[in-house]
Image (cartoon, rainbow, N blue to C red):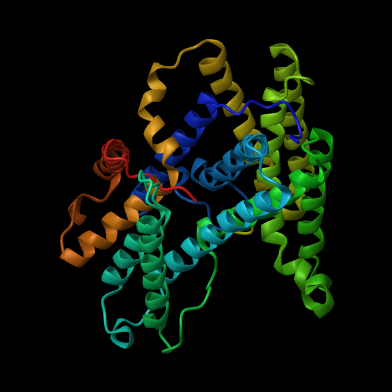
Length: 397
């Protein structure tokens, strides 16, 4: 039984927001290595009490995850998934994101190539090869072939985990979960909330308040020091990220739950009220926690979710209401294949490092030349995804 009347079809404006976010992510990640550019094009320092558009990329991903969850759960329930089958799907997706984040983080820093007996570049490329083989969508009716490929690839992941050694000669460990891992935890908790709330908008807003409250309690010094409260403190970041995912859920329901928000005018009014609520709450909490992506403060979460709400409302009006859709075709391949798009820049980085080549001279990695290169690189990666989609290389958790 479905929780609401959401459509099971893909929503073009949500795909456009996802594609735009991915493009901006690739752009700002490449931009991070460019010198002599304005500070608002970089991540703000942890204690700056400020945020740039770069600091909004990660929460935009979380927001889009939230927008997608109600449609995904409804779709699976409409296809006849039982309660157990739905939970299995959620858990497997979460584990997939955690595994990806776990390996990617360990490939970035803290490794000992001599102890590993192989280059970290080769290690990472083997990892990505296994990822593609495991999560690729296969267009064949032979389950034995597909399961064999996935089993061998999973075994490769196990071998890579055993091969890995850190700077102290120790085995691979979760230093932190990485962006994908953090998305995985937030996805899991948000799915739990969505089911407990049965897709009710008002209860989901209460859940946002609870997550924000969890962060606040977890930030109290006594809470951090007392062992009995350590769990609350350790999970405050996940609670903050979950609140953004829940905001995305609310916006999806405000725009697409037909029985409650029957007219476009009511959709926009309720979305505006929700955005104002987020801004006011963020402003009231700002003196106590400041704005910080690194610390995942409530104000950063609420301001980011409010901005995403405004951006999505505009895209909904432009794409779904005004039917100005031609430009979205550029973003469709990445929106339909986000995981592959996410890992392509890493694959390029490790491949070029292994081959000892550079795609762009270091002497030009400054100012306007570096800015133009970053924009070109982001568009080029999107083009690579288009090509891979034509060859039916698609990843799905």
